Image (cartoon, rainbow, N blue to C red; front, side):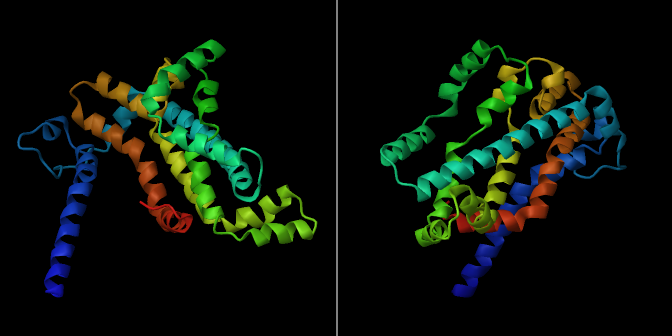
Length: 272
């Protein structure tokens, strides 16, 4: 009976893996097809000849290098800023006692319950009133901190005994020294995972950037891909090639750092 259940579990996992991977495989395959092959009925799964010129045509049709630069620059700045603000905020919530600490945590948790769509236009009006629409500031300022990641890191820091902090204070270390020499090294897996996930979120960001920017030079990669899909019309093979261009860096990052991501999530205490 147990052996049969194990076999059924393996079969189920394989089926789910195929269902999950098929769209990505088909996207890459279609990006290497001719127009006729990519629009054939029934659809072809393997191109007769690899059409790498589709990628060249996609780069010629839209400034993807500019989109890549914008996305990497904005995502990197947001990730670094989020890491800094998260480290200090999580330290205060974990190791410091102060008046109204519990109400503050309750208020921050309540912010996580508010859907993004509810505040997106209020945030847009704020950006407009500041006069920074269509600038890098509009893409960076709203993402300098994250309540979710503050509690993500705090959930790990609670596993660090308070005696470590007290011992550091007895030895004459100030709070900054404790953070940089003890807390950060002990939570590096969680910080690495948080940084990588935050970077991926910035890479995939779509709604906010399209609201606060309206020029080609300021587009991020997701917005650029959406605009290219509209401009390319029925050229499915070029759309698929462009989609592969945008998603490939993230897939490579995940493949390289998947162990660190798993270790960081497992060690954070976050339950899925």
